[in-house]
Amino acid sequence: MNKIPAIVVVGATASGKTALAVALAKECGGEVISADSMQIYQGMDIATAKPTPAETEGVPHHMMDFLPVTETYSVARYVEEANRIAGEIFSRGRIPVVAGGTGLYVDSLIDNIVFEDEPDNAAIRMALRERREKEGMEALFAELERVDPAAAARLHVHNENRVLRALEVYYLTGETLSERQRRSRLAESPFNALWIGLDYRDRQRLYDRIDRRVEDMLARGLLQEAADYYRLPGAATASQAIGYKELKGYFSGELTLEEAADNLKRATRRYAKRQLTWFRKNERIHWLYRDGKSGEETAREAAALAAAWLRQQKGGDDPV
Image (cartoon, rainbow, N blue to C red):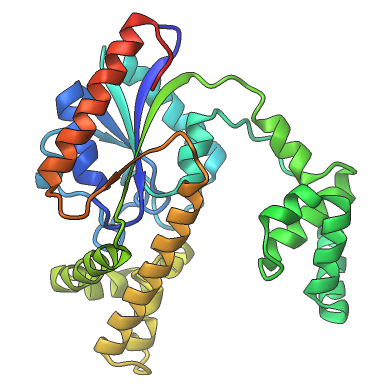
């Protein structure tokens, strides 16, 4: 094989990605590479649903629990380090199983997106912010539609940071952000990937799983974990993580625990919707719907897909 075969498991939070990735790794002789932008941080175990040793069932997991919460991390660094680990897994005769819900991480790794040094200019950024205050975001968004219609089509007028960033790049470089992103995808991917997505046709089933997960997190000590991280100096990442920021009102006395838990459930449901919106754009994904199925039944369905795909890989055919 000239390329690394990889199985990719994606879907919304609480859809069962971890269990399926472990089952596929055991079935296919693989190791898991996490693609979760929060599970990389040390100690953020409960809020990020980091798998326990019992849940990993002895399957090696990589790109997880290695970074202090006070440090920042970039998708470019993730791609570099996850690529290296995938190569090491393959060199041992095993299959990388990439699993996670951070769509940008997954897509950037599998599609081998090359990240250029992003220019920035404080003066241009400040000028754009001043214009936002005077003219409003609608005027700036209309300007983006004129200079970079492709970027504007992917953004919403209220996504202020990304709209301003696209304009900043254009005025600093004379090149649209869309062109820079197009060029970043020209490098050939080192992977032949089988994409498997988990979802529910009845969205309420997923939301019920999310609600149960939140209740389980609280029972396992989420309050103490969040309180510990709020006391850490410079732990800005933790304060933005879903599972921590929704509890801040409880710690300040503004909310009851029940109100904070309800906020956390709503925030997690909204996050799940954003994840699914992202992944639905990927036509390569084989969607498995879990309505009325046990985890074991879903795993068998996914294993059959993976077995057929691996036979094609060994025979030199195109991936399914």
